[in-house]
Length: 243
Image (tube, rainbow, N blue to C red; front, side):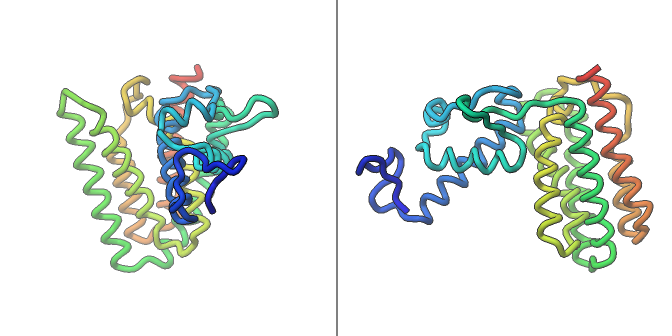
C-alpha cells in the first residue's frame, strides 16, 4: 500500500513501491533501531523523534513509526501522550523481572528440547559451543578491539543459547526467548564491553556444564545450570550498575 499525505507520496516511497517494499523498509527500520537501542546508542529514556530518526536512518516516517510500534510491544520503547516515543527506562527491578521471566521461558523450552531433540540438534549444540568457546579465547588474548569481536561474541553467545532450545517445537517459546534476550542485552552489553568490572567467574565452564547436562538428557541439571548462569549475570550487573 503506497503511503500518501494530501495526495503526495511520503518521502522514501515511490510510485512503484508496493506492500512488499513497504514491509521490507519497516523491517530494516526495526532491525536498525532495535540494534541501536540494545547496544546503548540511545540512552534509557531518550526521546525518539521521527524527524531525527528519519535523518539518521534515511527512512521515511511510515516504516519508522511501524518499527517503533513493534519495539513498544517488545518493551524496548515506550510512548506517552503528547510526548511521543522514547527508549524504555532501565531499573534493577525491571532487570530481574526480565531475567526471571527468561529463566521460566528457556527452562521450559530446554525441557521440551531435551525430550524432542535428535542427533542434528545435539550436533548443533556442540558446534555452537565450539564457536563460542573459540571467540571467548580469542578475545582473552587479543589486546586491540574495534568492536567487531564483541559483536561476534554476542552473536555466538546467542546462537549457543538458541541451539539449546531449538528443538522445543514451539515457535512462541522461541520468539519469547528472542525478545527476552534483547531486553537483557541492554544490561549485559556494558559488562561485555568492559564498562562494568566483571566479577571473577568461569563463564566458559558455565556454558560447558549446561551443554554437558543437556547432551546427557539430564533435564533437571541442565535447567538448574541454565538458571544459575542467568542469575549470576544478574547479580554481577546489580552489584556493579545499581549498587
